[in-house]
Length: 173
Ligand SMILES: [Zn+2]
Ligand SMILES: [Zn+2]
Image (tube, rainbow, N blue to C red):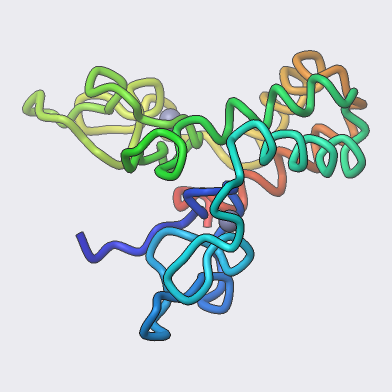
């Protein structure tokens, strides 16, 4: 398990650059957590709960993307739930759509029926992408209106949010 995580497993922030990672006690980068959550081998706020993190994150999302505060908080709470710090286990996300792969039956399948651990069953089945011609632009067009109605936010803001999110997914990089 030397794989470095792409997302902070405490706050969900993408760990894009090496400087985004927190540090272990010996100064090496943390494999799981960002520098805001984890420094010198310990959580910066050891008493933080998923609720306090969701309240803070929700407030930020609400301000950034014009989402009603309560929906923003619930959305962030759902994003935080599968993360290692809160679930106690490392849940991989689909590298195409970002869905957390919490149960084995959510994993994609290879041609021989074995599980593919990189993609979910909606994106990858029997050894191939379900929609091989899908582009990041089409993903954004498809998901932005869904997100806008789910969170009660302007479509323009939802488009910005999905654009930023898809940039973190390995399939589209
Ligand atoms: Zn973090
Ligand atoms: Zn997927």
